[in-house]
Image (tube, rainbow, N blue to C red; front, side):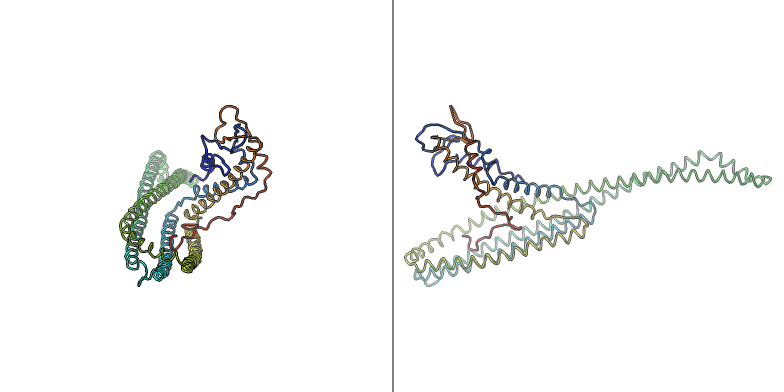
Amino acid sequence: MDVDLRASIRAVAVAACVALALAGCTHGASPFGSRGGGAGYVDLDQVVQAHPLHTELDTLQAQITLLNGQAQNAPVPQTDVQRQAQADMEAQLAIADQQFQTQMNARRTYYGQREAAATAALQAQASGASAPIGQQLGVQAQKIQTDAMKAFTDYQKQLFQADNQHLQQVARQLQQEDGLKIGARRAQLEKQETDYQITLAKQSQSQRLNLKAQLENLNLSATDRQQVESQLANIETREESMINTLKARDNADLKTYEDGLQRDAAARYNAARVASMKQTNDMLQARQKQTNEQLRTQLSGIGTQYQQQVANANAAIAKDPKARAQIDKIHNENQAQYTIEFQKALASYQQTRKQLVQKYSAIAHMQLQDDVALGNEVQALAAQRRDLYAKIVAQVQSQIGVVARNDGLAVVFTNVRGAGKAVDITDQVVKAIAALPAAVPSSSSSAPEGPSSTTPSPSGS
């Protein structure tokens, strides 16, 4: 995720030509309507860096970079238990997200319907109608939307279930492949050990037979017999030691081979998971687009009829200040109540995600992470940085205008040095900006985790 917004925001600022409440820009220059006819140039990046709040921009960027690094360097599950824990956690997080979305959709629908009903009743009263405005049309439209949402939700559940089954199959296949490879390597090493043991026995066969023949001599003295038996035992001990050394080396080799297979399997599983998530997201986006197009087609006719009825009612309300005040009151009350419910549900949803991560991290004996929560936090910080940068640029624009007018400049370039004898007023603007207090309002708190940091309106307004 590219969260360095300096280039894009600077492009916006350049396009605006740093004009101070003045219209008209040409080729990256700002006209200032001065009595003089000179041209000036400002290095916008240098001026922004001199602003008292530039350190806060850097701090926000550092936080964004840190979160991005945390997302990119997340530990990869190595064992079957860890992989299963991560898969189970992701499935549970998806369920929690779906439950939150379903709950909020239901509450949004409820408050939207309640506001629409109260408004329609007031409109009907104002227009003298016997029934709420668009009552029948509203029922039809609501059914269309509910059916579309249910179809999309069912489709989403099917994709999530298919992903989970696919990843479980991938995990089983990787485990089976590794088992076969490890079994083949173990059999190969055991055969080499057996062949080596046979080779050692052949090498000492003549000496062993000679020693055994001496032991069969009944006239052999006790001292000589003890020496022969000792030599025979030494042969056995030496061969056993050499075989054990080979087995130890083979065991170490087999362990290294198993570790390599596990790392490779973990990487392949993670690649399959990422590919599956991307494919599912693409399919959901395509289905959402298709659903939206179908809804627009189905609701267009209903909407036209409804708008005509509303227009007639609103024309009557426009003539009645008391009715207009009642309309505003209805909307504000429904919005306030929905906002309270949304914030409570969002806090509960965020806590559920944290608990799921903690639970499955304990099962896996490793720290798993919630990529959705990290992504939302990065987006919130990026938006905060973008807003702060825009406010800083606005102050810079104001100071450029002041310096330009004082120097009798008619136009100031910010993206090119300009033609002819354009005067560089960067230092003057830098001094003016550096002298400003850190007065640009900014928020230091990041947006809450969840699907959105903003509170949707229940009425869609």
